[in-house]
Length: 326
Image 1 (cartoon, rainbow, N blue to C red):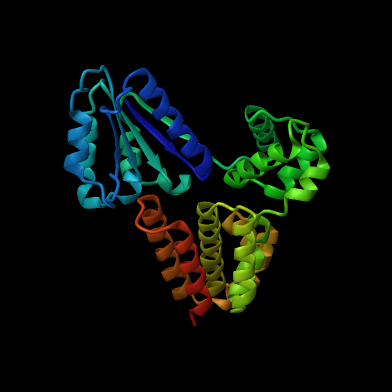
Image 2: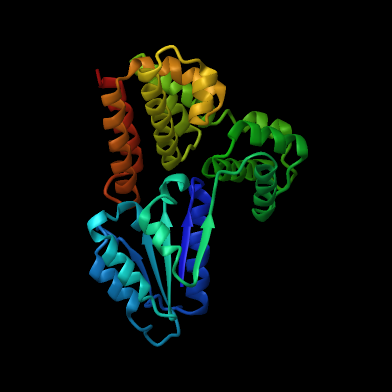
């Protein structure tokens, strides 16, 4: 069995992986001897031979094995793809392979290895896109209840409006609100007192400050988010998204210098407000600066997930690079 867990919502991706791992350990592997995670601690690369050997090995005094592999699709190069295809095709019924991917869904589904593995028998998919609208509201309500709290509808709406779809931050805010409310329903007053606008709402201000090389303001905004409990992985994700948007706008304006925000919004599939902000911000960066920053973001994302670099240092380094590049 091969299971894909992927999508932009890294909170629910992580939650799903941990849920499946916990359930497997309780049912099949209480000693943990038949559960493997790759890359292993202290390592950064996926060792083909070691992983395939783990997949094909018989369980030790158990009926099942579980092998969890992070970012296999994203990191596989063309010259090694056939090896992975052949190796994964030999997955025995006794092994559950979980492929966890942090790459954006629209990029992941275009990867040839992803397309090939879709053809295999007994393959299952769990995509997690960012929650929006009523789905987000329902998730927040359920999360509050699962953590032993209650929330009134006015507070619920205010909480969703302020935090948005950042579920790492939302989880943190919910825990904080439940502790503050002391078994009473969370009300609007509590939200007003404890929850400020999310980093998603301030990302434009941060990038604008960076594009103008306003170091003090950019670092102030970044530190303010950390004091509020913002998740470093989410900060990196937001920076990555904004750099990708700026890259798209920069490329479009290089071809059509007088393109309107409406045209850019339509062509790039972004909101007109986001397009208008990006048009102003992109003037502070060259195409080469954005490309080199995008590559660093990808490298740091992988290093953060494999323990090579602390998440806060990666965020600081990227911010500093954007501020100092000329």
